[in-house]
Image (cartoon, rainbow, N blue to C red):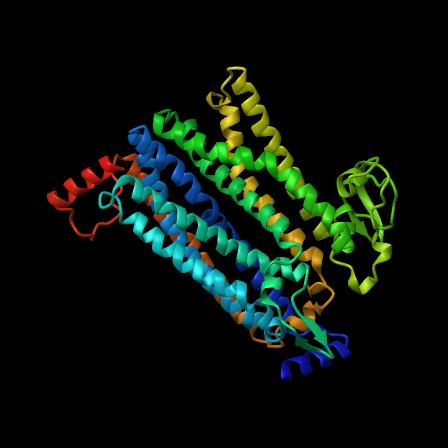
Length: 473
């Protein structure tokens, strides 16, 4: 109540609450950092499953070695993600009391399921890590299924909250009071399926290209052994499917934006006025109400945004000035995402077409350099996608229900919180890089991964039982 009164006083004075800017900066930084780790929780278990299954069914020691190494990396990333995810959960209440204080009952269900999914993922990751040589091969492999499913469900829950902020439902607002709360309807809101599909496919793009890029770098250093070839091929196949599927998912999602958030679409397209047969504007910025430095392709804007040659694209002139998003940030972030996605889709399409014609581009250094660059580009595309989604919704935290200035904290001490988060995240980043590079050096030197250095020794009797179980399966 006190916070709401203070927000009203700041609004009456034409000022933003003092916590608004640091809250935005801290949330943007921590969410942008954590989302990369969340992608590994979604996609990495599937890749580990493929190489582990190959190792079992084909008696492939190289594939099993990859599964062990990738599982070790996954454990390190999971541990770091647990810290950053915990920070994010506290930030929701600390930075945005106007959101959680009023709509906590509406959003509680997906947050509860996300916490449950986190523990399930941690349990089965632990079983998988310490199960090498202690479980029958196929039962051990099966541990990856609930682990991967929990990662997907947890990500779905988080995305459902964001989708609800874009498509608020599951409650009624009567005289400023929240009534008739339906948390299931809020969780499975109208926008969640497409937004989650876009994020899910994007996760496989990011992880696939990042992991493939690591092995492409090894191939560039003439490490052309089976380990590096398989380590490149498996994630690159996942990335290929995702890169070719993503433009279609994004297109369908973009068409829905016209119906739900026309001001965001106007910012995407840099449309100052409503136009039929709208052009596609490449580049450009809005300066004093005028579009400058833009290259236009006739009609293509209507085709992409509305799936029509003549359908109009709404302009900013249909939106009140106080309701318009930051146009230039939204437009440039959206176009950067689309440009990188298109580039990566063309790259993988050319690779497999030439592979079909018996020309292997993975033996060419210029292509390997492109594969190395594809990882950071995929990360940048994902970050730009979230910037376009979040900044394009402004000035609303909950679309046309709660403004961001009303949701933000009125505390003047949030800059200290932001500084602390920066230091923690920088420390985790440095620590992760040091640990991963140290492990890579030991692996290159021929060291075997010891996943359970302090685990119980497997007795000869237990080992014989494992062999018999494997034979029965």
